[in-house]
Length: 328
Image 1 (cartoon, rainbow, N blue to C red):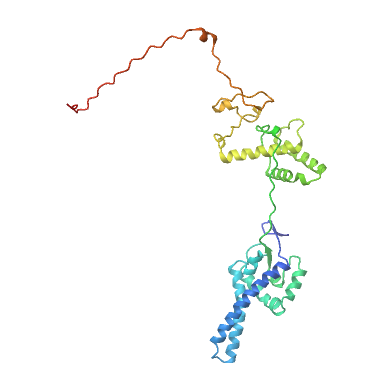
Image 2 (cartoon, rainbow, N blue to C red):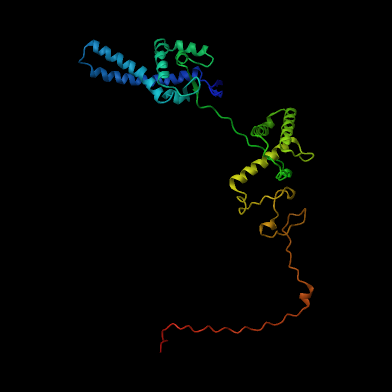
C-alpha cells in the first residue's frame, strides 16, 4: 500500500497496480485497438484506391496515429483514467495526489507510450515498472500519475460475541456518553479477534481496555466479572441503546417483546405492568403442564342461601307513528 499525503495533510492509502495486472490490461487494450485499426485500414484501403502512393501513405500514418495514440488518450480523458482493459482488471490512472487525471496527463502518457510500448514492444515499460517502487512506467513519471487498484478485497466483518446471560441488563444505568469512538473501535476489534490471540496477550488487552472503559464511565464492574465479559456486556448495552434510538423505545413492545426497566429489576418490566396476568408457574424441577388453579370462594358466600331471582317482565315497545295507515 502506498501512503500518499495530500496538501491537506490527509494520508491516502492507495494500492499501486503491479506489472502483471498492468500487462494484462495493456494486452486487452491492444487487442481492441489493433482490431479497430485493422478494420479502419481495410476500409481506407478501398476508399483511397484511386489516390496516389503519397496520399495513401499519409492516410495510413494518420489512421495509425489516430487509432493507436489519439483514441487511448481520448478514452483515458473521458473515462477519468480508465480504459476497457483497466476496467476489466479493476485498475485506474490517478494523479500523484489521488485526484482524477486531465487531458494533459493522458497526453503525456500516450506520447511516452508510443516510445516505451509500441516502438520497444514494452521492454522499456517493463524495466521501468520493475525498478519503480510503485510500479510506474516512464509515462507515469513524466505525467505525474499512478495506476492504482480499484477493486480491493475487503475483510469479512466478524460479529461481536454476545455477553454472558447472567450479565444481561446489569449495565442499563451506566453513563456511556464520555466514551470516545476510538475506544469503542478498539474494544470491538478486540472482541472480534480475541479468539485468535494468545491467551496471556488477550487477558492483558482485555484488562487494559476494561480499565480505560471504567475510567471513562466512572463505574466499577461487578466483583468477579472477567474483563472480556465486562467489555462484551457494555458493548451490547451500547448497541441496545442505539437500536432503541433508531426504532424508538416501544419499537419491540407489542410484538412479543418486553419493555426496558430499571437495572435493579434485571432490565425488564414484570408482565403484570404490561397489562396481562402471569400464567401459573410450575414448581421448580418439573417440566409437566402447569396445575389448574380453581377460584377461591369465601366461606361466608358458601353458607349464605341464594335468593331466587324474580322474572323480569318484558318491556312493551312503543308504537311509532310513521304517518301510514295499517292495511285493512
